[in-house]
Amino acid sequence: MVKMQVKLGQVTLRNPVVLAAGTAGVMGEIGDAIDLSKIGAITTKSITQLPRNGNSPIRMATLANGMLNAIGLANEGIDSFIQNQAPMAATIDTTIIGSVAGDSIDSYVSVASAMDSVDGIDLVEINVSCPNTSDGLEFGGCPKRLTSLLNEIRPALSRCGMLVKLSVAPGDIRPHAQAAIESGADALTLINTIPALAIDVETKTTAISRGVGGASGAVIHPVALRVVSDIYNDVAKDAGIPIIGTGGTMHWKDAAEFILAGATAVGIGTASFVNPALSLKILQGLTSWVKRQGCQSITELVGSVKLP
Image 1 (tube, one colour):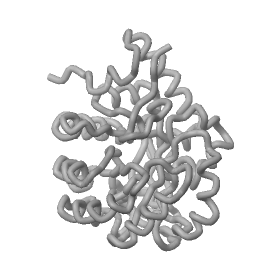
Image 2 (tube, helix red, strand yellow):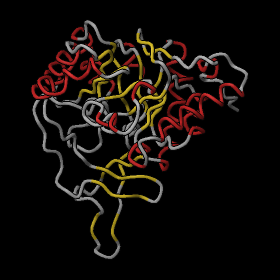
Image 3 (tube, rainbow, N blue to C red):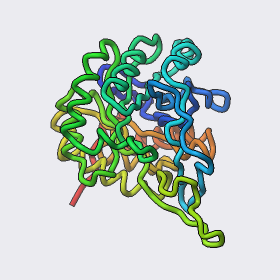
């Protein structure tokens, strides 16, 4: 047997498969379809301080190799989450990552602090990279603003580790990753969806009502892979900070690429909409791959690609 356990900060996951924010339900409803005790971790839907209705329909569209969405962080707000969702956290047999979003430092801190108080939530992911709201990239787009935000959030997390979710919208995000690490991030999640556009050529209208939305699925995988490699080699490796590689993992080989590029864990998103059981098939494929590589632990393969 090979060891598939990985660590994010001080938290040990039974394996590197993580269900990404917004793809497992609010608090693991995907457990109706798959056995969550076999998953490394699940991430809650991103929660904000106040309830959000999100963007007007149509909010999702199918792409040739992925999906376009502009949900707009629709959620019930932290008060309802704590009352109605949080009590279930301790009953779910996997690591739970609470996803936090906001539009001000105070709102982020308020939600993060509430998440930190929940029995059963071990890690908090700070989402500063949502492309589907007018303010979703406000903090993730500027290293200085990101530092200001995280320096306020970090003291509010007395129990949980802090993950920071970045994307590629600002361009080169190495300074952003460095800022997150210097502000106390225990891990980085790379990447979020990528701003994109799809058009219905018959109606001459955009495929979703907001126009630009976030592209996900196989279409963004090569981009996500490049970002993980860049951040791992130039920022995270020397700092000893793990990465959750997220973006277009539809097959175990996609997950293996992330591991070789420098990711410690792999986020599964769009694949769960295609088939909730794909995450378990990806885990099976990864496990067999580690055995074929002659390794005792999957961690031996992290960042081991031979770059030119």
